[in-house]
Image (cartoon, rainbow, N blue to C red; front, side, top):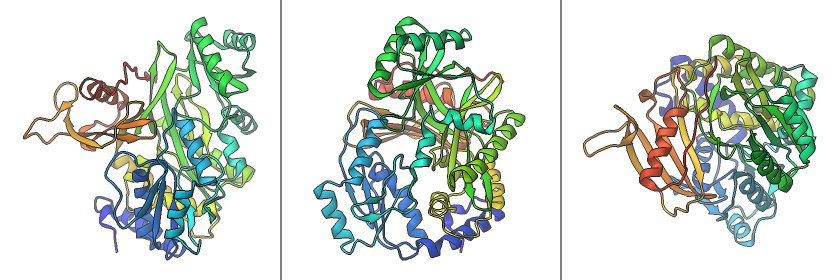
Length: 475
């Protein structure tokens, strides 16, 4: 039977979704799971997918409650009620707690699963979590895979494969070494410094800085001194921050379409702000195929070199010289979200985790690729989002409209063409702008629309985001 969530899909896509659900039901059917990987509300999607695959009872163990509608009452859940000053700190604290649960969380988990036969499962876990409260991890992440997320270590991987990247120098966090590297590499627009993963994997621009002056260099060095031993120095690359995703299986690699990363700038502070993603943007056809070819090459290398299977993400910048990769994430990445939305009846996170676990299945990567590329090209989606320091204890929704002029709140009687949401988050609050897909033209960047939304939220909801600037396409 075809899941009603696939009603807008093509006949071929419906067949594929039904095939993969049937393929995965013997893996997940009847098994109890502890779902991990972020706020409780955000875990509900994976839990619902597992439920449709016939899983037994499900327990959601989140870092905090999170923004949005509460999870279905059929799910048991527990919030660790954590707060953090940054995304990196949030992941570190949460994953540390998963490895050594506080008493109240362990008691709640034992009530749910007294015989400790459940498995722990999560789509996005950054570090190695072998078990949760004595429950073995399904799709556990090997340390050698995690190591590739280090923005320093990945340089050796790129070189070994002969992959073209921007010129870079790896230097210690010392004033003279950083200044010499920046002087050698600056092409006129400054340099980008990215720290190592000494204190844990990081992303979202948290330990990445755009250095264009002595003052910004001093501020960046002081930041890196607190968290890193080494820094990668690269010339600043103007262009579109974007990613390309794939999925590795024993019999081959499935490669998907490019995704725009809404990575914005605070030039006065030298900061990059990760603020969402989307599939509305289309790069030039030749660049798209070059990105997909690169992803296939990297996927094959992941299988051969580190025995990796499952989803992966390559982030980079599409600039004057084409797409230049800057990092590799061997795990399920956020950019697969809008790709998955094109065919919600296909349980992509569960499929990836089965591959990571080493389940011997007929994965048919060529078919998966052709269907998902076609559907995600046809059905676009995206979201602008920000983690904020301002504290919100309740979730608020409002419809907005952008039929004429900048985005504004819909008036009584107006349907609107997008949704604002703000609510509790791990750093204080979480804000998102989700446009109705048909209201966004395909081709241009989504980032300028997201900036409009953030400015409106600042004016009307006191989100205190401040001025942000988009990247600029150069091809």
